[in-house]
Image (cartoon, rainbow, N blue to C red; front, side, top):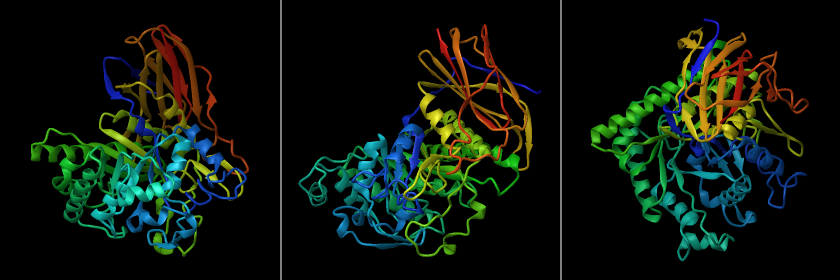
Length: 498
C-alpha cells in the first residue's frame, strides 16, 4: 500500500474538544521566566516587566492553560517568597536546577501575565519540603474573599478580588529520586489525601491532580499510580502523566513514531485508574492530566549536578527542526484522540527551555518550528472529535514494531471540518478521505508545516525559515477529499460543510 484512506462519520466520536488540551508550562528554570516571559527594562516590556512580544506570541499560539511554578522547582519553593513588594522578597537557592532565585516574579506577577494572555492557571503546591499547611494557606491566599490572615494579605498586596484558581497539582513527580522531598507511593498517597482534604475545606470547588509516574520508563510505572490512588482516589479528579521524546536517544523512525509511546502511556494510566475504581467500588472516573510533554534531547543533558549556581542560565534551549514539529503534531493528535479521558495537557515549557517560543535578552522573540502545529491545532480543533477509521502504509521501528506512517485526528464544529495529519514517512503520502457520512464539503484548504530539509530550524537570524504554507493539489470530488502530504510533515485540511 502506497496511499492512505480515512473514513469519517459524525455518528462516531471521541467527545468534545476540551479547552484545557492546549496548555503550556512556565517553570522557574533556565530562562523560561527571567528574560523569557519577564524582563524589566526590555524595549517591549511594560512597567510590570512582562514582555509584550512573548504575550502576543502566547496568544497567537492559542495557549489556554498554564501550569506554574513547576516542575521540580516547586518541591523546594516557598510561595510566600513570591508575593508582596518585590523589594522585600528574599533571594533563595533553587535546589532543583541549581539556580539563584530572586523571586522578582511570583504568584501575583504570574496571575497578571495570565490575564494578558487570556489563559487559565494550573497551580502546583509544594509537597516535597512542605506539606498540608502550606498548601492550605496558598489556597486561602489565592481563593478566599477576605477577612482572614492570608486572604487579607493578598488584599494588602493590591489584589482585592480572589484569583479563583480552580486546578491544583498536588506536588510534582514525587516518585523521582531527583525530586527534593521525594516520597514512596504510600507516603505520597497519604500526603496527597490529607492535602486535598484540607484544600477542599477552604474551597470545595477545586479540581485536584495527583502525581502519577514521572515517565513511563521508570520501574514503578503503573504500581505507583495504583498505590497512590488507593489512598486518595476519592479526593482527586486527575492523575498526571509526564513524558519527553528524545530525537537523539534512538533511531529516527523511533523518534518519528513517539506518539505510539504517548498512546500506550495514556491507556496504561487509564487502565490503572479504572482498576482502582473497581477495587474501591467507585463509580467515579478520573481523567488524565498530561501536564508535561514535549520533544527534548534528554540524553544530552548532563543532569542537575552538571550545572553551576547562576541566575537564569541558558540551559536546555533546544533548537527544533521540521522533524520535531512533525512529532509535536503527532503528539497533539494523540491527545485529541484520547480527549474523552485526557482533560488537561501542558506542553513543557513555554519560553526558551525546550520551548516553542525563543527570546534573546534585550532582543527579539521568535517562533520555533514546534510553535506552528500547536498554534494550528489550538486554532482549528473545535467542536467534536470524530473517530477516524484509517488504513495506511506501515514503517518499521526498532522500539514499536510496525507503525502506520500516518497519524490523524478530525474535528467537526457545526459547518467546519478539520483534519489534522502527520506523515511520518520519507516520501509523499497520497490520502483519500471518505466523506459520505457528512454534508457536502466545499472551500477546501490544505496547510502544511514542512521543508525540503527536515533538519531546517528557525533561528534568531532566520526566524521564518519554517512556517505554515499552502499546499497545492488538494481537491474534493463528490464525497471524496484527496490530498498529498509532504514527507515528514504536519498538515491541516479544512473544509466547509453545507
